[in-house]
Image 1: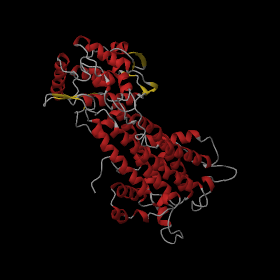
Image 2: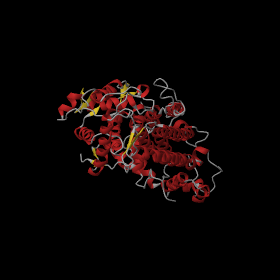
Image 3: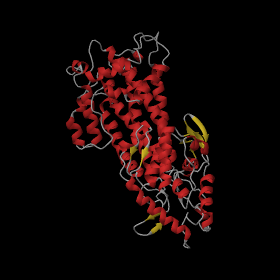
Image 4: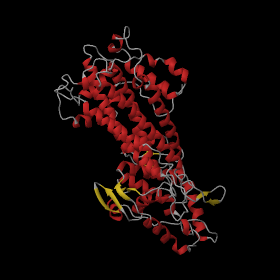
Length: 515
């Protein structure tokens, strides 16, 4: 696989999504090297000087008052990494670990951390040769950096810890040796530079963002299917309604829904003479809800793009000013806020989708569809419990969408007395997206079933193609059958973007549109 060249400070979300989706190796451009080496030289000089510089010739945290002699520099940094390898729980998924490694390279590549270029090259080589550290996913509170997970990552660079290579999990030194790499010996501040930072939290938040945006796009498709299934009105999609409010996501969601439902014979069949005046909110307010969620996701995206390009360790080397300054860029508050925003958006997309599922299975509200969308209600339960599953997952997402960033707790003998909890906020997003994908997959199953009950009337050409993609995996529900595999297949169609791709329409981009 060809390596992707990323420029520190200028890397786009599109490139980070490519790393996340494909696991491609990454290199930094050669012109990033001079700034990196200049900062490293400044740190070496400080380590040999008399003035105390945090983490360079002092201890860490509450132990910063203890001076470290130059001969103990390497031991100091090694001990820092090993003592901070306190992570627990399941390991990070491989693609997320690789994304975290890339984010760390981008941060170090800003030339403010004081590490040698050789360490960035080692990270590049590990990515290229498939050496992926085994990083337990629990243990960070999102301040002073994602200390424990980043320590587990860094341990492999110095020949400790565990790493996966060619499908085998090996001790760090063996994993490096297997691909012809040599462990590094850390110089002044280099261990600290690696574990200070938000790259663990940011990697998880980016994954939630990328997968959540896919779900938001799919929610527009499934909601269009549901609209035709219950013979809902497209009048609430009139462009002037949304222009009068002015929110970008709402305007764009309405436009995409209009395109999805364009030329629907089902819609035209009841445009005149329908006794219903207004549809329930879950149909009528789709642009206002999903569009608002899109706006929130885009706000989070802007924060995470900035963070992905940031120098977030401590202290930072201000080369031009000739200073090494202690600060707090390792505090992951921006990431924590972004993760909480993503969580709220995911929860609300699922909440309104679940109401559409409930609408379709209810014969009182579905405009003459059979109860629970089965041809023979009573003998068959149809999609009765599939709807209950959506309610369970919707409720679970509501619970875990509660803000994490407000749940600070002091650590490290009260030196780190306010923390972001960004790691918690970001890690939960994967489960929330998985739950949402199931909700949307079940909605697609229900809506396709409902539309097929409207035969010989057809839905729009775009939605006919979506149903065809669904039916290639999941046959119509004529009689009750074991439904779990159907639900799993539908959730996979959502997760892979297959339903949105089937529309053959331009999809709303994660970048903010120009209206």
